Structures are given as structure tokens and as C-alpha cells.
Image (cartoon, rainbow, N blue to C red; front, side):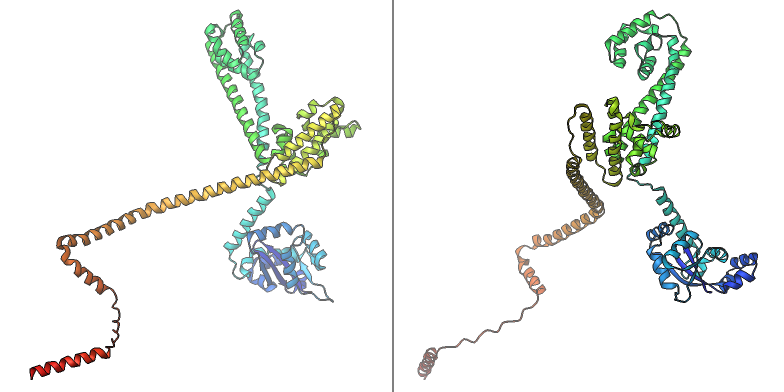
Length: 533
């Protein structure tokens, strides 16, 4: 039985013919087979290269490695059909290293597949692969393996530059952690209450309390002139006056060292609060870039929580509406299924304003409808151009459905709303395309101008030298003309004529003299001769 072995490499597919397979598998012990494989000379006596199919590009190699674990790629199919001998009487035996690939090939071609035993040992061919294929070096083979490994890893991670939802996940997690930390630190700042206990009743807000703690310091130093600075913080004249009055009635004193520590800690809490506001603004901008429709429909924070809980925007887009509805309430769901109680009606979407505005009997209905619209918005964000047109229209639909539950006014049909959204989205896409083309033209014009400036700087010196040389020649020609005057004019003309090519002289035509004139001239000659005689 002739055994062919398929070997997949980062540079291409190779087909080897295994010689004397029975003797190798039956007569030799296992350790001798390993020694033969490690030796290139003995390995060549057992295996010979039948065909090699190199990949055309790195993209082709990535497509093949992604497809080989699931389906038979067109390149592999063509390679095996061309090089594996097939006959009606005997089916070819093909050795494959992976049983899953073997099952796919057997289903596709009907080959007799062998995966274990000798084939498993002969997969050590990777040690001598670069020596068996002509034109392939060890350095090129290692570079191909490294490049394909990086490409495959990037494809598995599925990181997309345009859909940076990982930044949203990290931002919302950090935002939650900052909320907890600021709340805890604000409780610690309340040790200032030993010195000024009435302040926390007048200003219950944590951030404003920390700012006032840093501003006031020792309560005994507050005067009527401090009301303006207090009013800038609390934004209320009555509260500022109440703080001033309360500072005069307090009894407990504080040491300067304790006051310094409290002020430093208050400054730290105020800086954390300012950073939280900046982070929230960053999250809003990121949601506007990555998931504008979801942010327009349900809000930046709730949309970011949905993406974070799902793991990515792609995973959220794959979820059905029923999963999105209870996303975040998994414990309550499984507890209800275990105890055979009522399942939860909503999860993270409960923090949306729509469910809070709905009546108690309509909360389940509006949460189901809102989850449906969230699923549509996430799919539009994931698989189309970023634009908030559909999110605005979906939000209008939820508002209409909410008013329908309260007043009974019929909402618009989904088909009509989507037609309007598609029309507006096409207009927005055309406008964005026009802006991009304009920016591209400006960029090209700027680059061209920059290139001209760079080339002009290099050629300006040469042009100046040429102009200077030309002016000097003109001056040298004009000076002798001014010295000699008009006498040199014909000489110049002669020089000019000599420089011009000589034209052939035209033959002057012969002028015919009339007969009357000839007779008159003959008579005059006769008269002269007679007079002389």
C-alpha cells in the first residue's frame, strides 16, 4: 500500500510519498523510528517529496489556516486532486496529522485516512522541511512561521482599530471604581465634622463638601468678606450665609497639623472628582465614535455597560433581544428557574430613563420593546458606517410606544420610520463623503505646496546663478556697442548673415527685348559710322 502524507507548513502545502510503510511500521522498534527521523539521510531513504504548493501571499496563508480547521479550502482541494493518484480499484491512503482535517478530507474526497502510528512520527518532517523543498531556506521558513503566527493571533483576537470597544470596556470599569473610591474617601473627609459638624447638613453633596473643606480650613477665620468665595462654590447666597452663621456657633477647635492633613486629603478627593468628569467626557466621545446609535438610544453609560457585560460590541450584536433584556440579571434568572418563580423582566437596561418613566404594569412591556431596539442599534453600529441617525429614530419609536401605553395614541409603523432613517442616513453618508473628499483635496494640495517649497529651496540658488550669468552676458555684449557706435552696425549684420545658413542664389529670368528697339539701335550705329567717314 502506497502511503501519501500531507504536511501543512506556513509557506505552503507539501505532499510526501512514504516508502516501504509496512517495514517501517512493523519491523523497526519505536526508538529506531525516532532516530531515523532525526537523521536527514535516513529520513530521505524513507520519505520523498512528491509535490509542493506554495502560498501566493500572507493573506492566502491566513485564509488557508483559518479554513483548514473547518472546511477544505479551494487551494488544498486543487492540490490534492492534482497530485494524489486515484484509481477505481484501490483508494489512495493519505496520512494526516490532525484527525479533524482527516475527517473533512475523507468526506470530501473519499480517501482512506491514516492519522496515528507512523504518520504521527513522520510529522517530525518539520525538522528537515527546508532541506527537502528546493529554494526554501531555514531563515525563510522561520520568518513565514512567525509572520503567519502573528497574523493568526491578530485575527483570533479580532481587534479592529475602527471599533475600539475595548477602550469603552476599560473606561466604564474605571468609572465604576472611581465612584466607589470617591464615595469612600468622601466619608473619610467627614472627620472634618469634628471641627465643623453643621457643614454636612448644609452641603450634603460630597464633591462640594470637599471643596468647602479645602476653602474654609479653620472655621474661626471665616468673616463677612468670605461670603463671596463661599457663594462661588455653593452657587447660592443663602447657603453661603448659613455656612457663615454656623461657623460662629460651633464649639470644637482643631490643631493646625490635623487641618493640613484634612486639606491635603480634600484636595486629593477633589482631583479624583475632576478626573471622573474628564473620564465621563472621554467615554461619551468614544461611544459617539464606536456605538453612536446605541448611545443615542439608551445613553452613554448604559450602552457602555451593555458592551462591557457582553464582552465586545460584536458579541452584543450577536445576542437576541431576549438576552439583551435580562443582561446583567443572570443570578436572578437562574434563581427563578431553580425555584420555579417569576423570571426577571430587565437587567442593565433598567437604568434607562424609559423604564423609570413607565408605569408599573408597563415596565415589562417597555423593557422588552427597548431591548429589541437596542439589539437593532448595536447591529447597525457593528456592521455599518458610524452614524446616529438610526439611533435617533429608534429613540423616537420608544418615546411613541411609551406615550401609546399612557395615552393610547397609535405610534408610527416601523416601515415608515425606517424609510425615513435610510433616507437621512444616505444624506449623511453623502455629506461625510463630500467632506472626506474635500479634506483629501486639501491634503494633496498641501503636500504639493510643501513639495514645491522643498524643491524651490533646492533650485532657487541654481536659478539665481543662471539669471546672474545671463545678465552678465547681456552686459558684455552691450559695452562694445556703446564704445564703437554706429560703425560696428554693419559688421554685426555681416556676422549675423554669416551665422545664417547660405541660401541658394535665384536665377534671374532672361528679359526679352522687343524688335522695334533693336531696329532703332541699328540705325543709330549706321549714322555714327557715316559721320566718322
